[in-house]
Image (cartoon, rainbow, N blue to C red; front, side):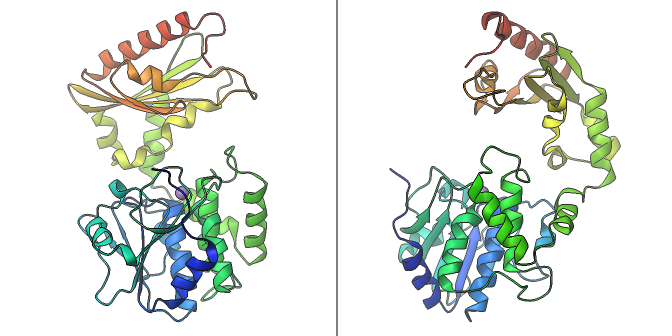
Length: 353
Ligand SMILES: [Mn+2]
């Protein structure tokens, strides 16, 4: 099925304006774009006079929770989160995949006439029959802002306090989904919206501090241990880091603290591939593979989906994972030899396109 818009922003805004008790949700395990989109839309609907029921499910990085005001969003770490009694519209933002909506999937499937979607992913389903989708957008908030503009609600100055405005929630989604405007998806339209949101009063420095500089000390100690374990191979083109259970125990951290850690070695110029191995149990090692994008358009790069395939894993060309049925040290040796044969077979360039 082709996943694309079935309605325009005008029609979607009409449906939103008519809702008295809208439910707003997003994918399981919300990230900054998902939570930012839920909050921005909830605030806009509240400004329209609706009694909004915003709810999310699954683990949330505690650093983004500060985007929400106390009590603004219902949150269930586990189990279902369904619309409150009397709900007359359910809006799903930042996904159209039923597998990411287990918390409310049954309700949505039972009430298709009440389900509408706003998304920027290339793939999804018909779970929300009325939906606005634009996969050319880097962030869901870019699609959402068209609807909020259609509703005629100002993005700022703040609706409540200097913090917690519609503009701030939109900016948080835009910034986090583009790696704070560094990813290739951060095009001219992204910067144009960012400029508009800054003009609407967003304090980007406060936001950056809250979202990106809110880790517990243990997380940095875990990074130090990972970096301390680093081994380079393939003439500096590959790095392998290892974390044992003991490293998590000693730093009081868990797998939730691994986000982004595998990218740390990418600052090394010669590096093409970074591998992070974490001990699951004494017989299982989890592997994360990352590769750099090409140095210039059309240049070669390493396909880590292919590398992970050696271990029955997979993913995308620049980000993949695998579970290796071996203790940490043995898994490391096997990954190293897989990388060596990969570069041998790729010839002098050492990389494949
Ligand atoms: Mn997103």
